[in-house]
Amino acid sequence: MIKILIADDHPMIREGLKKTLRDEVDMKVVGEAKNGREVLDFVEKNELSVVLMDLTMPELTGFDALKELKIKHPKLPVLILSMHPEDRFAVRALKSGASGYLTKESAASELVNAIRKVAKGGKYITPIVAEQLAFEIGNKSDISPHETLSDREYQIFIMLAEAKPVNEIAQTLCLTLSTVHTYRARIFEKMNLKTNSDIIHYAITNNLIESTLPPA
Image (cartoon, rainbow, N blue to C red; front, side):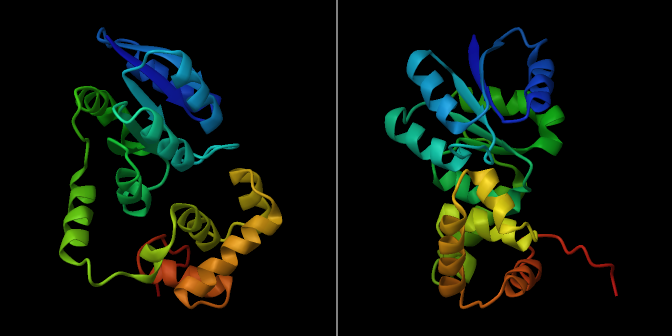
C-alpha cells in the first residue's frame, strides 16, 4: 500500500487530490498538512511512502520543507505538485531532492502514474523538465543571472516579476517586510538590476513568466 501525505494550504486542492486518488486500490491518503512545518511534524510521527507537496505554503515553504526532509529522511520520495509551470521551478526542486514535479493543471491525468513511479524509487520527469536538465548539463559554463539566485531569492524574484506587492510576498512566505526588502536588494545586486520593472522585463524576456501585454 502506498501511504501518501498531501500538503497544500488550500483545503479545496487537498479534497480534489483525495478524490483523484480515492479509487486507487494500492494508494491511501493517510494525512494532510497545510504548511511545511506540519509536513515535518507528520513525517516524524508516521510511516509514509510518498509526500505530495506544494511549493508555496505559509510558515515553512515547500522548498524549505523539502530540504529538511532530504536531510532527515533522504529515502522518502517527495513529489512536488505546483501551480507554477515546469520551466520555473522544476529543475530547482529536483536539485533540492524532489523525486518529481507536476503542475496542478496536469495532475488529473498524470498524478497516479507519478506517485507510483516515485514510490518505487524512480523519478518522474516530464519531457519539458528533461530538456531543461539536458540544457543545463550542456551549458554549465554559461549561467544566466537568475540561476545565481538561491531558491528563496528565486521564489521572491518570480513573485516580483508577477508584480506582486512586497507586503503580499511577505504574507505568503511568512516573512517580515524588511526580510523581503533584503532579499530584493540581493536580487538586484546579483542580477545587476535596479527596479522591479527591470525584474519584470528580464523575466518576460527570458520566458520565466508570461507577458500580460497584448501582442503588438
